[in-house]
Image (tube, rainbow, N blue to C red; front, side):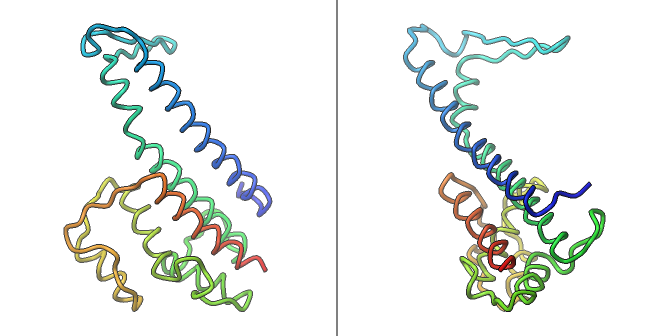
Length: 192
């Protein structure tokens, strides 16, 4: 069953707490391992059991994983985008299994027109929202390199592409927060 609009906002808050609490937990865990007097972090092992499954990693691998925060940001951006899609389905009267029309630039435009709003009022504008969608698509589909089809998507919408052909798409805390602000801006403007 699809989420209601209030449920979407509750999930958004929950996801924000998850992001911030995860950053705190990662930092604390890194501080713990940095303060220990372990002679060789490359050979010291950490093991955890989960039912009949066992996971083992060296401390170096564990610390490296904690330092690789972009995976956390990928997860948060993907779910944020999904919540925005859920919001759009409800606002546009579509069922949970119905496809949203035309990418975020299409269905986002429909959301805005329902409330008499325009893209220039959305944080980052239409180009900024397309950038969010492209970053999310790269994450969801396991690619990180800008292709001609990415540039064409921006050009067909009459918007400049923020990347060049062959550029790598990465994500940071600041960027995931910016992308989430843009999505939130679109949702808020289409609810007024």
